[in-house]
Length: 411
Image (cartoon, rainbow, N blue to C red):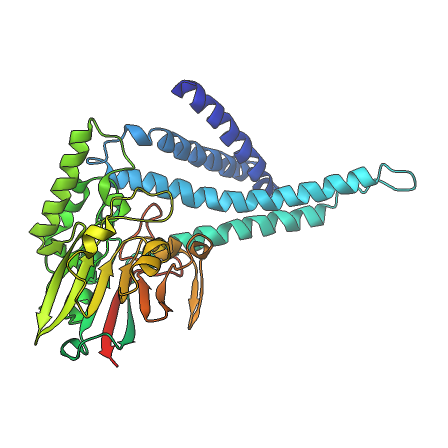
């Protein structure tokens, strides 16, 4: 199927969908003046047409020159479509109800129910109100939630932690996704907040970019300011390998990955690529293991745990940086029982959910067993960071961006 034919079919389906959704709007504006009705109708379909044209031309826009425009197009289309889907469901339910009522009236002894105007008007108004709510919530999530950084503090007690490291303060960030950012001032404020936590050591658990290393360039000098006396350590996430875009050649992709590695080093981050570092204090050892992306799901596996682990056998306490939390159950717990703490990210908590006190809910929990916060199995711990940035939808509703502070205490 060529692109033009695809667009014609998609456009026809989109138009039919729009006309169906507009039924609810037409009921509401029925008592308006003819000129006002025409104005609303024209505005509705013109806006829809512009969104469809925009999303159709999305691939033709250079990501470097039109990054903000591309973000505006996809966000507007997604937010508006979400509201329309809600309206569509309301209208569909009412039409199904009326169809069932009509069919039942065809049987002997039944009278066909006439159209109940007040009920249809009530359903139309309910549909529009219901459709407005997710649009308002998603809009608020962009304006307020995208950079509403939250500090989440946890204390982990471990019998394996040497006394020399008792009270060490870890700051974790994850899933920065520089390619999604549109507000440098807000991002810089987030970096200031990271440094205000006075971490002894900072860990970044992957996904600096969305698709390619160039996305990070405008933000390197901002994240270069992240500092800690014991160092800043980082690793790679699934998006850092450029697997979700087309490359001119395998060599071009490889060169981009190597450039991303150099960007970590430019920022002063010690990037761990299936390797480890040993920190020694008063004769005690703390091992930091950095695994390249490895997950139990459909994402590519670049990690080599045996290589990453090698040389840390005698370390009293081991901290593993592994982007995908599914790695914990799939390999870490069954095969590496002496990894005391694993730090992960990846899920973003779907950037949508509810968190009230200890109650947490997100669609993410139906995909990942461990999707946010602290988990424990025996003497092993996993912390899943909700992410510093965002991907796709440029905002957050309920599940807010996170800076994690973990204090380790020896028992």
